[in-house]
Amino acid sequence: MSFQWTTEMDGWRARIKTDFPASAMVYTSNMMMAQAAPISALTNSMKYWGDISSSNVIVVGRKDQFLLAGAVTAFRSLTLLRAVYENRRITGIEIYQPEIKPGEKPEETVILEGSDWRELLVQYADIAAQKMGVKPVSAEKNMTGYCTWYYYYKDVTQQHMLENIEALASNRSPYAAEYVQIDDGYQTFQGDWLDQRDAWPTPLKDVAQKIIDGGMKAGIWTMPTTASTASRVYREHPDWFVKNEQGETATLPGWSPAPDNVWACLDATNPEAREHIANVFKTFRSWGYTYFKMDGLYFGLQKGIRRDPDATSVSAFRLLLKTIREAVPDSLLMACSEPFLACLGLVDNARVSSDTSRYFYGTRASSTNAPQPCGCSIADAFHVSMANFWCFDRWFRADPDVVMARQDNAFYTRGQAKISVLSGIMTGVSLTSDHLGTINPERNALLAKSQDIRMRDTRPMNSIPNIWPMEFEGTIEGKRAVALVNDTQGSKTWKLADLGLPERCLDLLDDRKVFHEITMDGIDAALLIAQ
Image (tube, rainbow, N blue to C red; front, side):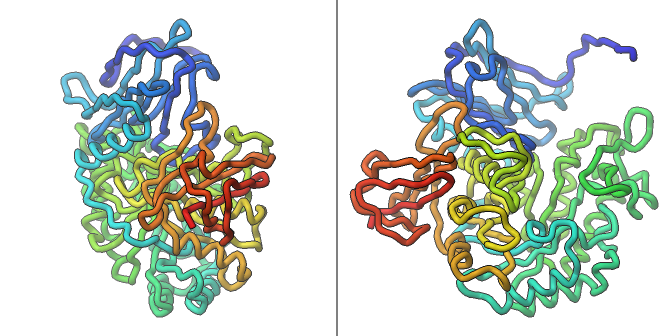
C-alpha cells in the first residue's frame, strides 16, 4: 500500500488563546444526533490526556469563569472545534470550517464569556436561531404520537400497523396519540418511497385515511437525501446522485440488509432530482400525510462532485430541505440523524438523542453512572437528549426519541421506564411505540404523564466532568421543579433543601408526598414540585 502526503490546507481555520488547567470542564456536542458510544457532554483533559473535539459549539472553564466559542450559521459549512491540550493546560480553542474555500467568507462565530456555562449555551442558541431565521417555536402543549419502529423494527407489516391504528383510535385515555407515523419497512428499497413491498398491499393513501378516520394525523418515514443502489430510482436515474473524483457514484454503507445497504446521496443541485423529491412529498401530502420523519439526513452531507460546482455539501443539503419545505408548507417536518445547525429555519422538530431501545442499557450494563459503551439504549438516549437542553424550543421542538413505558416486549424495569418518561416531560415531545392494545393500566398511566406534564426551561443543576448530570431544574406551570435521575446501581438520597425545594413536595411520577428528603434505589427517577 502506498501513501501520498500533502501539505495543502483546506478549509478555514482560526484559534482562540485560552489558559485553563487540564482539570477545567469542557462541554461538547456532536450536533449530529447519532452516537454509537456517547461520552459525557461534560468532560476534561485530565481524563483523556489530549485534545477534546466538538461540533458547532464548545465551552471551557471552571468555577465561575467560562468561555464559549460557537458557530451561529451553517449555510455552506459545518464547524468543528477543538480544545487544545498542551503542557497539562488547555491553551486554546481551534475552529475549523472544512468547506470554506480561500477567499470565501467563513460561517459566523461568536465568543461568549460568563459565570454560568448553562446560560452561555442558552445565549448561543438564541443568537444562532436569529441568524438562521428560526421562527418562534410553538410548544404550548406536549406533542404525542405513535410509530411502529421500537416494537416491530424492520419486521413491521401492514397488519401490525392496522392493528395499532385500531388500538390507538379506541384507547384515547389516558394517553391519546395526535400523530400516527408509519416507519421504515413499508417501501421496497430505500429511495423508492412511493413503491410498497408485498407486506403492505393496501395503498398508503388508504392507510392514511384509516388514521384520519380514527381522529389522528397521518405521518410517514423517509430518507429524502438517500437512495440505495438497488432502488428503482437509482437504477433509472444514476445521474441524480453525487459522484466521486473518478466519476462514479459516491456511496456509503447503510444500515439496511443487502442488497439495500449501499447508499448514494441525492444531488440536490440537480433540478430533476429536486423535482423528484418534491413530487414524493407532494404525493404523500395529497394522500393525507402531514407529518414527515426525515431520517438519515447526515447521509446528505456526502462529499463529492455535484451538478453545481460552487455548491458545498451543506449548501446542497439546505437546498434539499428548502425544496421539501416548499413542497409541503403546511406539514410538520421532523429531522433525524441530522446536523442540527444546518437544519435551522427549515424543520419543525429534530431528534436530539441517540436511538433508544427496548433495553435500558445497550451491549452491557455498568454499575457506575459513566457512559455506556453501547449503541441503542434508553440510558444513552436520555443522557444525550438532556445534554442538548439549551436548544429545546429555541431551535426546534426537541425529539428525545420515543417514550418507553410498556411492560410487554420490553426489557426494562418500571424505574427505568420512568427515566424514559422524563425525557418526554422535559422536552415536550412524547411519541411512543407502545402498543395501546396490550399495555397494562399502570404503565399506560405512566406513559400519560409524558403527555400531561411539561417541565420547561430544563437545565442540569450539577456540572461534574465525566459524569452525566443526575439533577435537573426547571418549572412546571410556573412552579420550581426538580427532576432526579439515579442511573447508578446503588441507592441515593437527596435533601430537599439542597435542591432549593421546600420541606414538603410531591413526586409527580409516583403520585406520592415527600418530606425533607428523598431516597431512591438504583435506576429510578423522581419529579418534584412544592406540595
